[in-house]
Amino acid sequence: MAETRTRDLWDKIDILAKIMTPVVLFTFGTLYNMHQTRINEAQKASDRVASLVKSLSSQNIEERKTALALLNYEKSKHPGAVPDDLLTNILPALVQLAKSEKDADVARTAEKLAKDVVSNVEPGLVAAVQNQVADDPGRIFMHILDEGQRSDARRIAGQLEDKGYHVPVSEKVTAVPALTEVRFFHAEEAQEAAELAIALQNLGVTEAKVSDQSRSKNASRVRKRTFEIWFSAKSLRQPLTNTSSPRTGSESQ
Image 1 (spheres, rainbow, N blue to C red):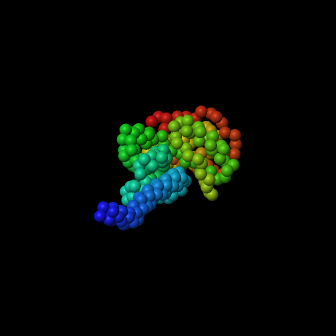
Image 2: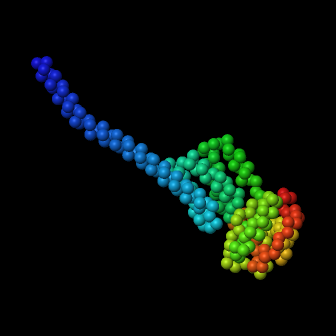
Image 3: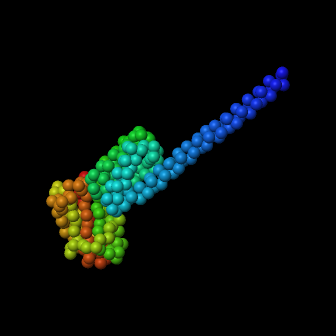
């Protein structure tokens, strides 16, 4: 009788094992697959962020706008796809874009996203980010016709950066004005543009003149204290002097 009960017990254990083994294997398999999925999603998010960093630094304004729009979309619609602690990796790029971007809308979007990321990850840094963005040095975008002008344009950029301006890498274009122009986009900044033209003249660009773009179609979209220098084809073909130039608007503010 005892032997029969023992055999029945082992039979039950055997049946239970046959039933539970697939369940256990399925459960562990499911958990493993979920874990791998999370890893894969995190890697995809990291790859997306890495690609967006390049786009944030693009010279094409539409590409910069698209990158910011995608970041905002991921944060609002799929917050788990691009977590804030991952976005902190591109925080320097966002702050730089907020400070140097010519387009006012893009700059505001970059600033807001930078603040959102910091407030969620490290609230104590919000003030620091705000101070960096609020410190508006003024921006000067240079345009050259050919690569032969780049080295001299870079030297001029260094002089203007010493005065506090942010001067990105010169953009090569296919057409330039007959005379070098300092373009401004807000009427109240005409004096500062004139001072920049004088600074260029003291640096050897003798034909520099001021060009008022405040009534152009897109002027309202341009941030305050944003200027463009369009070097003529004949500019930067002579030795540049190191003569100190007059104080510009950025130094008096």
